Image (cartoon, rainbow, N blue to C red; front, side, top):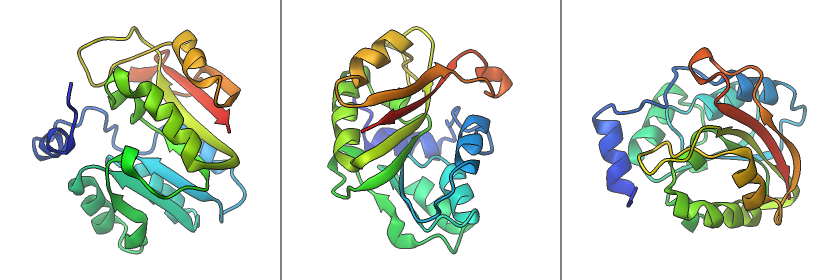
Length: 193
């Protein structure tokens, strides 16, 4: 399946954004709220409505970057958060991103939106984007993998196999504070390079 720029632009134009819950997800907000160093370099792939980067910016984090293949979500962040640094909003295919040295990459519905054949490339690219001891953290869906997506699903065993050679798996467990419609279907994780 070719989930290219045109595919995502069409999803935004048609307001086909079922992943949008209207606010920052509770597990990610809880994780962000315990971060103390506001100077860490953070990447968020797949902007959506930008709840996570906007929240980070509002909390005083200085080095938050967003990459999205589609223009609309980046324009939305500019409109809603006019003080967000425009140079940190990158319209690019994630797999072509040239920046690196991130201390933290936050995952929220980006992985599950990729066709499953791209998952090994995702793991390799995430590893290359992170600084030494950098963390990839966030949410992965926990429901049977499907050909009809996005989202495409997955499970703990698949994720361990996919990430264990490149990362130390610090946490990979059912999220205890998911929103009700996603309760039992989300895994919170922290993987360290």
